[in-house]
Image 1: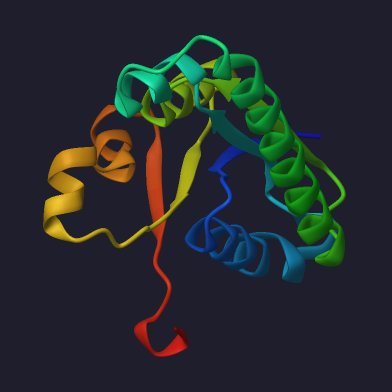
Image 2 (image 1 turned 30 degrees about the vertical axis):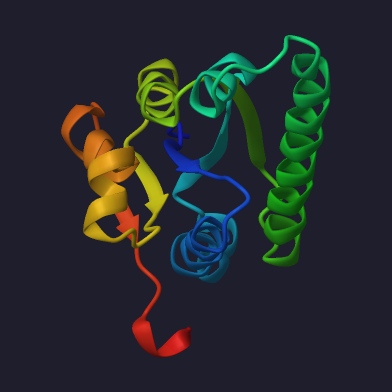
Length: 159
């Protein structure tokens, strides 16, 4: 009995992220039944309140606890969403990990930690300006992750 290969998939609250998860389950898991080739690990990079405050400008420390609660709630919501979708597609073995930090670092670290064979990301389809400012997580991971990287794009006609 060989060990399954590890597939890490990035998850967040966005439509592209959930589309990527559903597409991946449909193409890599559902049809195979008991022959599912991968162990799925969904990773959510939870923002650190401090980094948001630095972006938002001088704000009081009082809002950090509230942001902390909101971010925890969001992470919980995403975890539930992922588990529900997997269950719907008869994929019962999914680990959801919430890690704090920049998604670029978090995802590359998760790949190393789990010795993943493949990293799956949804494409947010940012315009050129937004990508220049934010930097693309998928671009970064494609260059820095120590495994193959698959970027799932939603077909134009499905929007």
